[in-house]
Length: 121
Image 1 (spheres, rainbow, N blue to C red):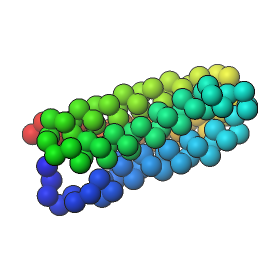
Image 2 (image 1 turned 90 degrees about the vertical axis):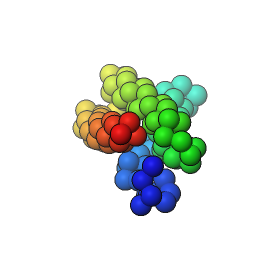
Image 3 (image 1 turned 120 degrees about the vertical axis):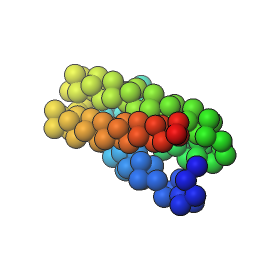
């Protein structure tokens, strides 16, 4: 693993995924209250799982385990992207909000792909 990166907090993908999670929490505050245990909860869990898995994987100590957790983070991103589309179709998100979120998720997914590739080297 890269010796220059001392903590998962140094990873820009972790920082960006934390920003995404905060944004998801803020936006889902406006979802209907009957969704608190449904889509609101699912989106919050998916978004927070991304930085959590990056952090946990980074601290595991082996490249193989780190790569496994990065893959789990990627899967959470795919899940979140689907939930964003569902929220848009249900009109809980405007098209502009959904596009902003999908753009951020896509950027994070690309970063996770790059990280995954670097762990194979």
